Amino acid sequence: MRNFKWILLLIGLLVMAISVSAQEPSSTEEPADSEGSAVMPEDPVLARGWYIVRVAGRCVYCHATGGPAAIDFGGADPLTVELAGGAPLLSGAIGEELPYGTVYASNLTLLSEWADEDIENAIRYGVLPDGTGLFPPMPYEAYAMMSDDDMSAVIAYLKSLTPVENEIPPAELAEGITRETGRTVPEMMEHPALPDDASLEERGAYLGQAVAACVECHGSLTEDGQVDVTGPLAGETNMYTDFGITPAPSLLQSEIGNWPDDGLIGILNGIKSNGDPVFIMPVAVFKNLTQEDKEALVAWLRSQP
Image (cartoon, rainbow, N blue to C red; front, side):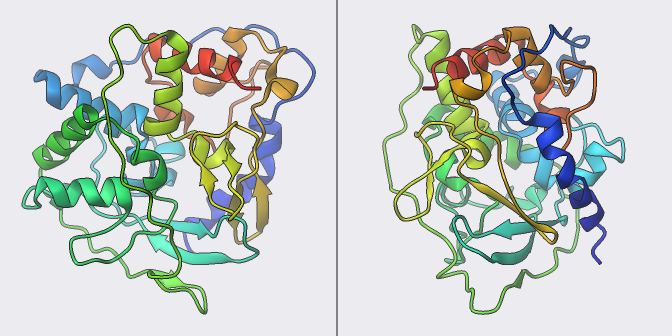
């Protein structure tokens, strides 16, 4: 059994940890401010890229050396951990009975020699320079909507990383699955920057859809069974594990409408209203979001039907 599989044993705690109910949770205090400013690059473009890669975009959660286990249970700091990849990630076929198989997180420290366009194509459209397709859980459908400014910042930061050698095992695909048939290529689109006068709700929608990719776990499905990246957070997507298929919780108002704002922010900080920790969700990363971004996400959640 792979060393990552023991994490998935916690999948049974997901509903208790982050599922929503009709009972209104009590207020939850936010933990002390992170020390992220101490390690954030001084250059404003690199700083924005650092923030997306290591915090808001949660890239670090999968691509950290040691993967989610290193962050959740190994004490690795997502703000400083190397991004050399290699962790096994179970990849589920959205809307299907069987998963694609097991894929391994890429090494993001070896991109300095890549052309910017090649990095962008991998992030937005899940296509490597040689034409190889990337599987989910890489949320390229969501990242396809990221603004050009933010994408440029991400690329600049990734190309600034110190190279770290780490052998990445080949994917172990399920029978009948190939990289050509096991993915959907997002549509090409324009990527305008968020207006300076955007509302808190609009900033939250951009963050939740195009950067944090909340829709990948909590979103809706299209008629052909793919993630609807701009649809409501109806919890129609599934998480695939060796122990079964678990649906992500809905975040519609019927489920969270009576939660106070600080209770929702508490979930992002990794603490439920009763003081218990949140599991599975990448809260070790999201707790480092700025307070403004947390409030923007809450405003977006309030806009859900």
